[in-house]
Amino acid sequence: LAKTTQPISMDSYEGQEVNITCSHNNIATNDYITWYQQFPSQGPRFIIQGYKTKVTNEVASLFIPADRKSSTLSLPRVSLSDTAVYYCLVGGMDSNYQLIWGAGTKLIIKP
Amino acid sequence: NAGVTQTPKFQVLKTGQSMTLQCAQDMNHNSMYWYRQDPGMGLRLIYYSASEGTTDKGEVPNGYNVSRLNKREFSLRLESAAPSQTSVYFCASKETPPYEQYFGPGTRLTVT
Image 1 (cartoon, helix red, strand yellow):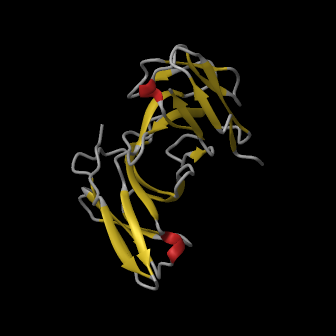
Image 2 (cartoon, each protein chain N blue to C red; image 1 turned 90 degrees about the vertical axis):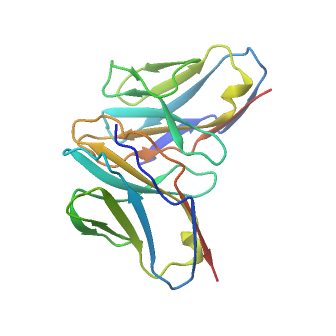
């Protein structure tokens, strides 16, 4: 099972772009990379998912290099409401469950 | 669409008591999951069900049982609660291929 490594915590300021990197050295060929956001006392919420290169949606971008051993979640122009824990997961097309959840990255946005 | 619902929201049990956590989803998803989350930690998979009629153990199944009652409902039972089972329990559902999981609001369980 592919395990992920993320920074435990990060700080930034309102209006800045925030990049959170996740390492997944033993990612398998069929594995996708998925990021979730979790606020206190709530269940995680899907942010973005990708397989390779770059994916962008209305809230974030996901950058995946050619070797796919890492990925970077990019949050443009963050606000105080982006303060949350962010999780990176790796899982495959033939998996019925998304593998191991690490402790995530606690992102604190300051005014 | 209510998404994923869980009952109860809060529960306090004494050691040795039993209870069932209920989960239901209205998105017609095949796969459903039960996780627990301890303070400051990520989620740990207890059991999952890839489809109606099937269940499989996850990372931390000891002390728990599950029932996939139908496509909508997936319950988690604690037969004899222990203080180590104090946690927040989340139910989730998703459709294959690796589409995103949708989570319920969680059940905060305290075992004294």
